Length: 395
Image (cartoon, rainbow, N blue to C red):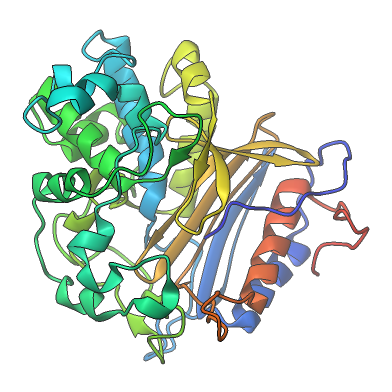
């Protein structure tokens, strides 16, 4: 899912919730082509949960607001928080070279130049390993030159994180360490996982669970240990830019291909709780939160530029600045946002991904789903406010 939200017309923040408009926005996303969508929205002391469509196209099982979902790169906010907690305990230094602690993984000059902070904010210059672990994606983001073959090849493959890191480090660098603009890369967060293992003596997943998930009281959030998701969850349908038609269910998939970068499973209520506690200074200290909110421009996978901190995105709306993260797994897309003033929150997820089919030139084209999602974001985060063209959010 996409954090590039359309600007709302500048106006005082709204703290009202309109259940009818929010439900209509979810219905519009389903009508636009998403099998199922569910969300939780919070404003002040009010909470709304809703869903539309189906969780399983074969059985017609409906989507429900409390289903668990693979939340993809939203995981990075949890991993970053675990790193910052180790910084607070004196086990990690943000501006220390990664080669000081992981010389066997990042040796030589690169190990001396790349710092922990650069891994967290994606300015290390290290390439993503994905096109090398999934050979049919080698030419990504050139959509006409990729295929979905590797998705099926790797469904039950158990990756070693060190193997994936080595693929990323062996690839040509995508920038200079600490450069003014970063490049989004999962390799950075697998390295951070290895760092957590080194300083805590446990796996990264165990550390994140103990240091972040459990203290935050997230009862439905965790890392799967195998290809299946425990508990009620939707099927997750991957279209892969129209190359998989009809979309294929990838809800059963070994999570080792992303680990502490994007393997987490959660509910929308848990995500809202986590980001409320994080931005409230109750997961990491206030000084650590300040570091997490120092952003740099980072080029995302789709070529757009996002403002990225230490595991957090910043999104500027006319009705306020928001913080959060979005994420994508095969067939599953999730977004979680909280306004900086704490007045509104949204966590929403869909069970379809990469629905934008390319034109003759290979450029993925806009789809009605894009507009329907944007309308939900406006309604959830800004309330009954017109967008920049004076048009009311979708009803």
